[in-house]
Image (tube, rainbow, N blue to C red; front, side):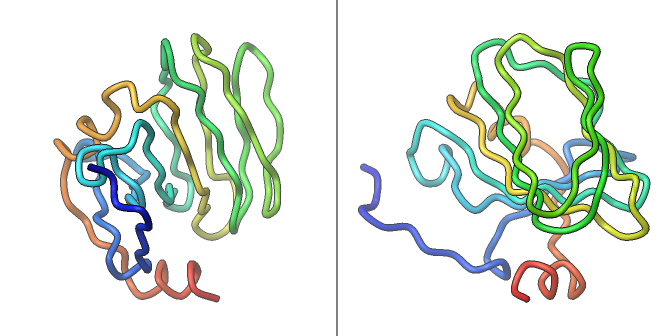
Length: 140
């Protein structure tokens, strides 16, 4: 059963790299595995110069809200700049890449609905907690 209210602060987020060598991490704040909800929500942390691997979700919508930093998003042959305050939505079936082009880390709040097995993929990765710089960026 889903809890009526779920509250977490960044120090409590479980954070993973999907595989060694990835340049982005997912800090889970809402998780269908743990919280029994039909979607996943996380802060995606991109290292300087980091990017997602090219990926596609066949059923899920993925939305990003840029909290801090700047980058580019490529989807469907179109590349757009993104920066703090921008919102990006990717429809199912579209290969996409988000790349950090800034001088520091890029932070995005990201949701996928439905989960489409993504939480399970993230949780199968390598745990790597948020560091002090991440906590500061998320709580300032």
